[in-house]
Image (cartoon, rainbow, N blue to C red; front, top):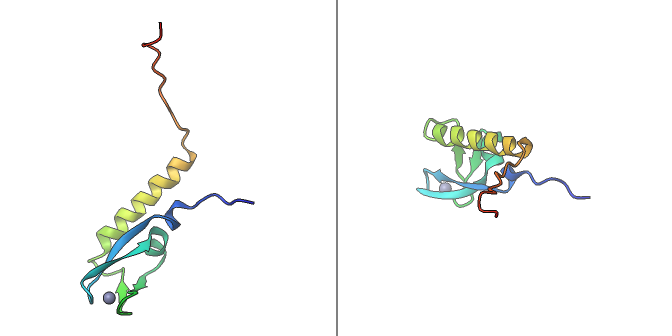
Length: 85
Ligand SMILES: [Zn+2]
């Protein structure tokens, strides 16, 4: 039994920890599903509701929307037959 891969749980995005001033990778789903993350280095909470992270969270929501759409959209490959003789 194989489950379809949820890309948002695979793709990662760096999130800046203001305490360490370093970015750490979190999965897209963890970023949009949580209101805060815990920095793996210093253990500080990263408040995703802070306006610092609003653009990032908004972008990731868009990306996930695109990923979900691409699951259902048929893959269109225009066939170029003009080179056929
Ligand atoms: Zn940190």
